Length: 250
Ligand code: 13P
Image (cartoon, protein in one colour):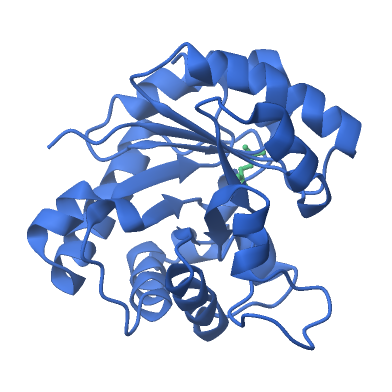
């Protein structure tokens, strides 16, 4: 089963509107040269509308860095699914470790966000990952299983392209310390087995599982060579056109 690799850039809280437009144009040019893979960027919400206009007609996919579960209303600081669609987004990152650990989002809230995204036609990217303490205590698979099961509770996936997962070990995010490709494969394989328990086996085989955590141009190819690593969710190295292009062209 061939899964088209997705190289995704999570810009986090970086880039003014003009900086974002310039970087997005450069990334779109790189994406347009590679019909064998998909490229996504998640700029800050303030830049989405301008970026969407600047890259219209390119192959570049846009995503929100998070999304609310309600359609509209008194939810200060939140962004509704339809608002992301209106800005050209097709996807939304949900449950990023920074949302979990800095802003206190739990699996129940993440589950609501995923349901909200799907109800409005956005493709969620559910992020999961263990802390260093959890890995050292041999809790990795237990923690990940809980995040996946609770994050996807009550959700039925009927087509493999309607959901993505991203495995981002917390100890590898922004630390320069990447999981080895063997460690990534071990976890990705486990997550896919779990997806096969939750959904039909054929669907589980289609769902793309990205790896994130200090992905750079020089380690991308080795990670991507693993059978269950279907792409990358990139932070720091996605903030410059040259390094991100190096990963797009792994
Ligand atoms: P880094 O690539 O900077 O480690 O960040 C990874 C990440 O959190 C992407 O969502």
